[in-house]
Length: 149
Image (cartoon, rainbow, N blue to C red; front, side, top):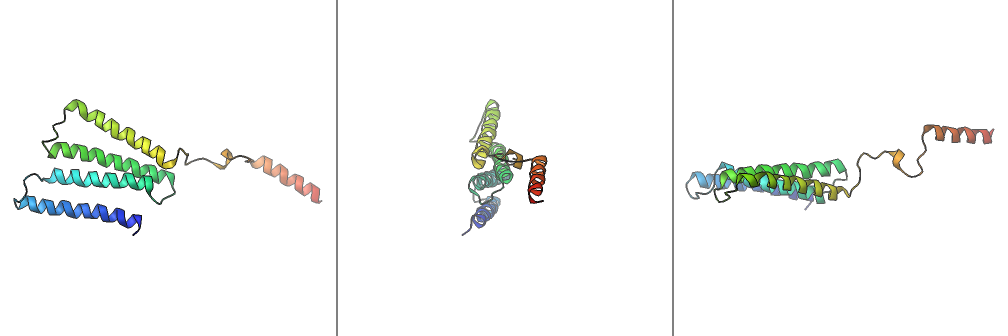
């Protein structure tokens, strides 16, 4: 099973599970579930999947790895607000919400740095050891032509 298939399977499976829970809630079988709970569960699971795919995914493009991690962190913030709205169990004081968001953002930045190994994605050839600019290459070509003639 490929990682891409597993990622899609988890996301769509969570969507189906939330839909089933919503049906059970509308039928009166379960009382704790509401649309905010569906958003909290779906956004939380999807956020974790995106963070893990950014860390362990198959893509070699460093900006895509970071983007996946940042998108996952954004989904975790959405899940936080939805969970606060959906469940009265999480009676989080207002002064704790911003530190939790800051912790999620700092964690996303840290994981983004870990995912790319500290490499710059936009490093040009001129930053490589032994790089010669146009004028140096042209001078060498002229020197080589002078030897041949």
